[in-house]
Amino acid sequence: MAPKTAPKKASSNRPEERRKIVATNRKAKYDYEILDVYEAGIALQGTEVKSLRAGHVSLNDAFALVTDGEVFLRGLHIQEYDFGSWTNHEPRRVRKLLLHKSEIARLVGKTRETGHTLVPLSLYFSGGLCKVELALVRGKAKHDKREAMAERDAKREAERIVGRRIKGW
Image (cartoon, rainbow, N blue to C red):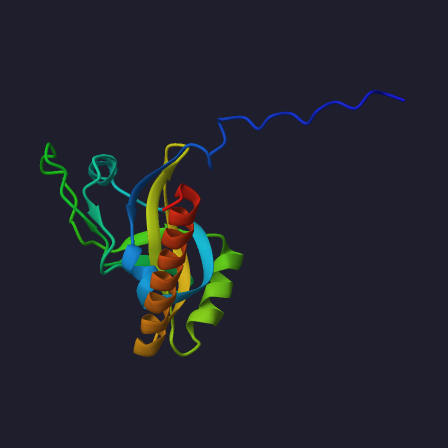
């Protein structure tokens, strides 16, 4: 019987470990109930990539639409590249998202349901490629937002009390 060997350590070259987050949509988790999350690539122009690497991007008003079997990201603002010339990009142009056909087919069915939409949660570079974390969401009512805030505050207060007891205050 061969001796058991320890499992190999995961390589640090994995794309998950080389993820560099450029922008996040923090308001999305407050305003929406997240039902499902997808990872999609984006079709970008050269000056857009340079501007993204500099961190000049805003996800505030961005959303995605499924039209004619393709997914497009609207409202994403990528500032014009400072050192660009006449080849500079339009800051709020519509950008195509790259997903598998099976994922797009699933999204078509789910977005047709009332109240469901696609919102980007974060924008990041993974292994040199720009990716978007896209979420299928449902809007929260005002009372749901208040409940979430109350839960968060209660959890924070409980952690504060536990921390004080540990320190002996």
